[in-house]
Image 1 (cartoon, one colour):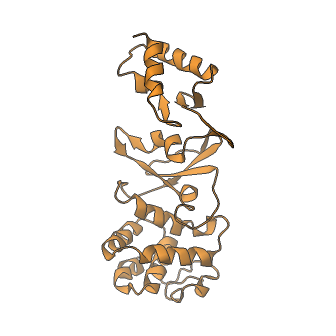
Image 2 (cartoon, rainbow, N blue to C red):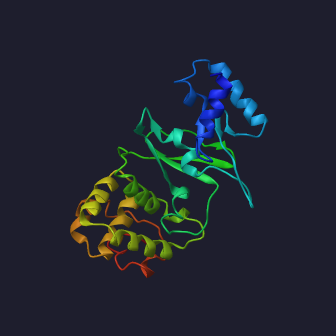
Image 3 (cartoon, rainbow, N blue to C red):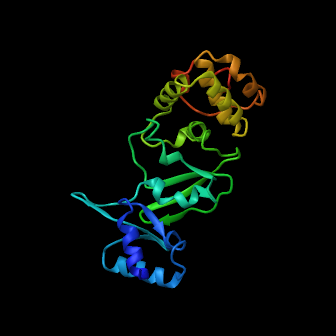
Length: 241
């Protein structure tokens, strides 16, 4: 089978808005230049679309215009290395998913141990948040919660009080086993994050889980989150003002 025919046949079997690169064809086709030329000809013919340098996808047209790949597809090359999870969607990318805001952002934020400067991919800005914990598939949902607590002031179109109330509801739905893991992961977060998590858990009458957090904090440091005392009765203990 000719290189071009093989590529067309393979792409026909891919789902719409699935992101792929020339490397996806290299296991069957060793002629790298031929693959790249064939893909670029398909872009020019409108059969596939280019997301960024070396990245392509099958376009899907709707009544509202062309549909872009979802955020996971757009940055999937930044979330895994050699099959191992090394990053996860967080911040602006998951505030809506967590019910913290109704807004959808054009920034895709990724939590990673090794961060890099922000850059543009299609209409999205890709930015990074430093994660000191080891990232695993199992702990990503907990890291996303901790990141939301850490960046509570930056959640768009949401007050501190409404965000705190939503975070209380999220934490209330977690088992004590997950909450224990959450506290352990929080020990590698900034003091303000540990203080707010402690205040939230104390509000849920989980004082037995927060002692390790409390011991890590400087008793004279104040954490400025104005108005949270309207949602939390525990702010004074945690020096949240």
